[in-house]
Amino acid sequence: MLGDLVKNGPVITDGAWGTEFQALGLEYGQCPDAWNLTSPGRVEKVARSYVKAGSRIILTNTFRSNRIALDGYGLSAQCVSLNRHGAALSRQAAGEDVLVFGSIGPSGKMLVAGETTGDELYASFAEQAEALASGGVHGFVVETMSDLGEAVQAVKAARGTGLPVIACMVFDSGRNKDRTMMGVTPEQCGPALLEAGADFVGANCGVGIEAYIPVCARLAAASGRPVWIKANAGLPELQNGVAVYRGGPDHFSSHLTALVDAGAKFIGGCCGTTPAFITALRDRLG
Amino acid sequence: MADSAKLYDTIVNGNAKDAVAITKEALAENADPLELVTRYMIPAMDEVGRRFECEDYFVPELLLAARAMKGAMELIRPLLVERGAEPSGRVVIGTVKGDLHDIGKNLVASMLEGGGFEVVDLGADVAPEKFVEAVEQKSANVVCLSALLTVTMPSMKTTIAALNDAGLRGRVKVLVGGAPVTQQYADEIGADGYAENAGAAVKLARTITKV
Image 1 (spheres, chains in turn brown, red):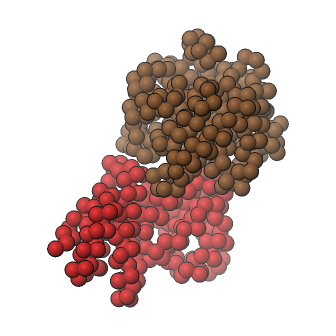
Image 2 (spheres, chains in turn brown, cyan):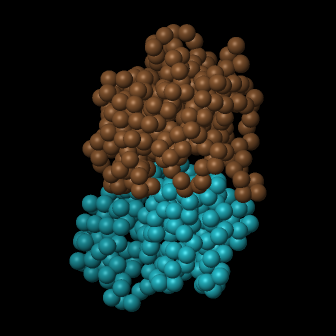
Image 3 (cartoon, chains in turn red, yellow):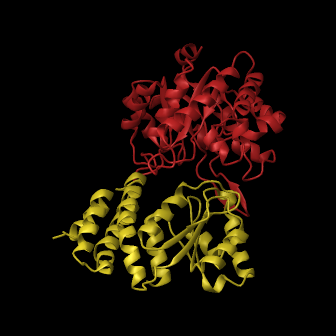
């Protein structure tokens, strides 16, 4: 299924979920993933809005649903059911034609500071991946990773289910904003993530879509494969106490051609992007 | 004879084992502990902060250096306390209410500790009244507030207001930081300072406490 999509030109993925939930009343400090159990209607609504906007792959509302991150919200006991329900909600919204990839985000703990261990991370991601697989996902996106060591554990754990895995890092540091928070380059990430078992590598979040064009080209060269890119809508500014993203759908989608030329095959949006951004991407694709 | 000058290199290079070994040897030979700190260790952390600021160093290098500094300081601090020397300052640090991100805050805490401050880390999602309580109990003279989300930045303002209401604002300096925070925002909410990164935070804490 994924192979067919890749053969047929660029694939539009989805946009942000967290910022959409905030528009639907999610309070700051609340765990968005909790809505899979407490407010499934709103989760499915966001999922459907991306299907309607033109996404060919949508993710799941499970970004924080690994045991370590859930612990910070006091929700670790619900780990398995949050993932299963998250997968099922996206599958319901996706229907037959759209693929559902399970979102696996970071633990929030730093390996290099000794806050967690590789084994602990692996166990936590494996539990999540298995629950997502049992909920019916078609594959996984390991995303928003700042630490290659942690991403490798997540990829290995997801790979263990036998489903396809896409691995994305955040490149937002260094003088050219082309390194991870830990100082790692696209050239270092690409081969390491493939070796861990990723089918494709990519970048998400970051400092806006322009900065990801050169990063995309370097990931394509480093991995020798099509690249997954989900940039955010730029960094938000606070206006009268409300977070406002200044780049709109037009500005965002104007970079589509350049991204495709740089080797991107899966394109969507991160924080601050909405279904309108996805429709703008789809329309430009023609 | 201990090569104290090498203490500088071991910290800059994040080599905790050698930093501790050299400190031990130097102290055994009756080196002045305060001189070790002021001549080699603090300048080393300043250099680490500088490299981080100009993005030659990244998080791992920063953490390793802070660990080396901490290792050496653990040997030196009891000797300084014996002499009645006070720490550079007492800092209460935390990520503000509604915000669970603590990586940046942890880095600043490590660097401040490395810089000779006594640090009380309240963790993430810290309510204003918790900051007030900690400042009172620990007689802190610096409060560091962190926020990674644009939407949780207003919690910095409410925390400053709570310090005001508790009558503590006069005796603590409030420093703010985090990805979306700016100098302009710091000025707007009446903070005493803003630092763009962990290295700058230590420098600022030092200037503001006049050490």
